[in-house]
Every structure is written in C-alpha cells, then in structure tokens.
Image (cartoon, rainbow, N blue to C red; front, side):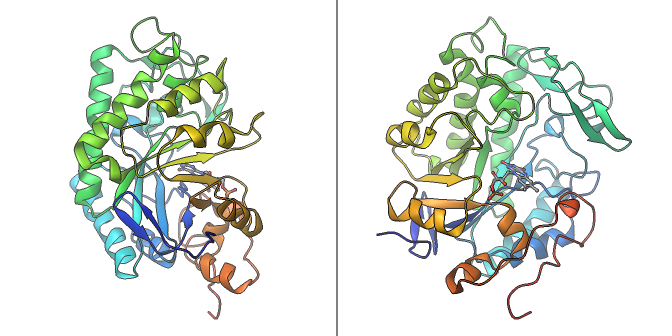
Length: 352
Ligand SMILES: Cc1cc2nc3c(=O)[nH]c(=O)nc-3n(C[C@H](O)[C@H](O)[C@H](O)COP(=O)(O)O)c2cc1C
C-alpha cells in the first residue's frame, strides 16, 4: 500500500516521496522575466518535496500574461534558473519547469511593443487583469495563423531545450486554467474552421503538437501535462468537456509521458474516474487536498502522487510536518503575488 513517503519513479526521475509541490506563480521576477535571487532560497527551502513543479514560466515573450513573471528564453533567464536548480539539487530535490503560455489572458502592456495577446480565435475574454498601471480590461486577441501556430510550437520546443540546459529535471505543459493550450481545447474560445478548430480532434491538435515537440526535444519521460477539466477559470468554457478530455487523454498513449497532473475544482463529474483508466502512466491529483485526503488517494491507488499548492507555499517543510503530524502555517493571500521577501521566503520551518 502506497503512502506519502513511499518512493516513486516518475519518468526518468526517482522521487523520494509522493508529495509534489504545485506550480505557483509568485510574481517576484524582474521586468525582463529574470527570476530573482529570492527564488533560489524559496525553491531550496521546499526541496524536501518529492518533486517541485515551478511557477508558470513563459516559453517566449509573447506568452507572458502577468507582471513580474519569469521566462525561459534569454541567456540571463537561463543563468538565473541555473542557480535555482543547483540549489534544489544540492538539497536532494527534483524540479520540473512549468511552461505557461497565457495566450489571450494577457495585456498589450505586458508584451513586446505593438503586439496583441495571441489566441486561437479573436474572442475577447470577459474580465480584467493586473498591469503595471492597475486593473485593465482584457483585449480582443490576435487569432494565430497556421504559420504562427508553428512558431509558437517551436517556441515551446526551444523553451524545453533551455529548461534542460538550465538544469531542470523536466517540464510540465500547462494546459489548464484557461491559458493558450486550453483556449485551443475549448469550444468557447476556439471557433476556428481550419485543422485547429471545430471537431475535438482539431481542438486537441495544438496541445498534441506541443507535446510531440516537447517529447521530441527532451524525451517523453521528462515531460508532464497539467489539465483542469471544467475549472472554468479565465472565462474558459467548453460545450462537451467529457468528450474533450477523454479524447485528449486517449491520445497521450505512446508518448510515454512522465505524468498526467489533473487538478479538479468543483467539476460536475469525477474526472479522475474517467481519465485515470485511459492513461498508461503516472497519475497526479491536486486541488484542495489535505493530508488525510491525499493519503486515502495513495492508499487506494487512485493517484501515484499528490500535489499541494497553498500548503507548500506556506510550509517549506510540508513533508516533515505531515510525517510528524505537526500544525501547518496558514498561507497569507495578500503576499501571494506581492514583490519582495515577505510572504515568500519567511514562512518558518519547524524548529526555526
Ligand atoms: C499563489 C498561487 C499561484 C498559482 N499559480 C499557478 C501557476 O502558475 N500554474 C498552475 O498550473 N497553477 C497555479 N496555481 C494553482 C496550483 O497549482 C494548484 O492547482 C492549486 O493551488 C490547488 O491546490 P491547493 O488547493 O493545494 O492549493 C496557483 C495557485 C496559487 C495558490
């Protein structure tokens, strides 16, 4: 019977426990997308996780969607990430980089001069986003041409190459939360009538092409995929999510991915029951877990590893606290995305 502290093989990596730190945007990078030195401490503090999945990182400047988020495109970004991965590895940890292309969930002020956010279709998302000058409405995005789609896919591939160069153990494709990959998957944001829109086969094409590019570049055993069916975040809607995700996951067979990471938030259906039998690799469950729920998922074999977000943010030594049954620090929402050390590297460990 598996528990939080039984080791597990995830693709090429041998994890010492089954506790995974969720990808979490923390907005502490500089305006050139270079992670700060504080990030070295932040991730090193959390190296006791079986696996850390980094905050969302834009694969190319056109994929940036939030202030002070980091990238993996320039030499300065690669050099800064090397410090992070070295610190995590020095403490015996493993770390994947999450590749997050925000697509239409962005704003021209966050992007290179004169360009619009990219999307499958020119459909403006409802809502507002934080910019350097405060909250602003989303804009109508630029609908990618087929040639431009190929360039975006190539950008992901180059990003995976650079992530490995920067010392990461693998990459996770962020296809959840209403960002570019999910914008292609979902019928509400994808109203194309070419090979990338319409049928479920066509809507899934972009995600599958990106995965093919990533696996060709660094090997499927160093690539994970995150999805969140029916999360309906960032104005994303799909007419038939069961059909969409069933098809997508069926197509993953043969890619030999390191894992599939499914985070559910109030979905109308138990997608784990639907999707897990369709997937032939390691299955990670996240979203609103506590220790008891996580242990039950592992003991019943419903998950191979469990993913914790806010609890890991607030408890650098979360595995140790779970092992001892110790109390947890509470996360402070006000400092999730604020600049600086406060609420980032100052959560205490036990005995500190
Ligand atoms: C501050 C914060 C930032 C987040 N940023 C990301 C992100 O960059 N990429 C992502 O896939 N999920 C992101 N998430 C979602 C988490 O990965 C995770 O799915 C979510 O927190 C649910 O897990 P939890 O209930 O254990 O916190 C973020 C969550 C938090 C709290």
